[in-house]
Image (spheres, rainbow over the protein chains, first blue to last red):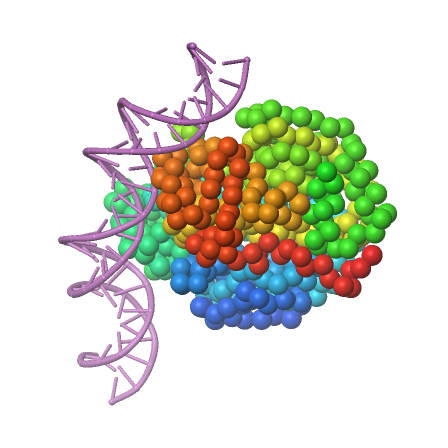
Length: 244
Length: 244
DNA sequence: CGCATATTTGAATTCTTTCAATCAACGTGG
DNA sequence: CCACGTTGATTGAAAGAATTCAAATATGCG
């Protein structure tokens, strides 16, 4: 499998061979593995290294004192899961592994070194963090104004687009390791209701979901149901003036 | 009134006189004024200058094709409302003025110049954007897992803390220019329900809200009702090692 | 004073949750 | 290879939270 970070960043800037080699330097830092349902970072921690997910899915989440829990972001291969080390701040949320996660720990100095020598990489990383912010805003819209069916279908669309951008989809399907309970924590609903919504989606042939695999027979139909517009993902925007 | 940007950033790093002078350079760029209910930037625009709010409140919002509308962030004095000019991307949301807004337009070059010469300013700005991301995540939790009363009280707590950090509160009150309809668009509810929740809050003496002014007789009680913890705002974290 | 905007009220409806139980799938040990 | 235990998915009925729609009151501004 190709380096997911390189694949992702090539969406945002055309990277030279040297840029790519530099990124490979990053991803050849010490590797760590996490089991499903394991915390990678906990609220209150002050992480000292940047962490980049190479494979597997992780998620940021926050919890209320009485146990209510909300996933605030999904972290897919090629995503940074800790990038605030430059300000050495206390984590205000936790990060957990959804399935088997492999990540590399990158010392800030190594990271900065790559950025100063490779401006295109820096720019591409800037794009990536801009897209993260945009996704966060879209989630606010999702939770605040979309109804249950739209919420769930929107999530499926977003995940499919993101995975496709890093080459992790098949024609009309992709991995979907979340249980219904976990899906519920992502879209702010109860597991029971997720189940019911899923059934109507299946009946309408909008999605199939079996054995941790999501199949989307008609992506456009799903997008319509979700009121999904991919503009906020800012994909495929490689600018000519940024050529390597 | 003191420069709100300076006040805000001093939360994050101790700024030298020179740093502060540099910030004043930024805020003495050309000023623009906007009327209430006016758009400052629209979805699809590609803004060319950074914009910093000096006075008044603005808000980021997204809309669904059928008109449903969600505020995704409140922009208060001292906040940047456009900071993606370095990647020259299309806006994926709009920004509107809630009341009379004064902002300055800062050319990216001027901005970068200040940052290269004043590392403490750069670091403080990094903090500020980290806090923005944290607030965005907290809003996701708010919309996804808090019930109506908690949502509204949480918003009030957050706004009060933010305003206090820039010196814009009185003892137990602050400005609150949002109509009930606008509040509804912030917390993902209907105006009618906002009204009803407000009435119970008034009855419980948790808040008073009259004439665009919010009074909080007992902040701790309000925080309890909201399940509010200010940790995510990362306020008052000036680190000794960053002294000027 | 009077219009326009904002707030308040009521009743009915809809969506989602809650609670409890059942069913299915899967991996393990006997 | 099958019983068993665990986790995840599904179902039903009832309760609850929030929305909808429509109308009535307030409030503020020119």
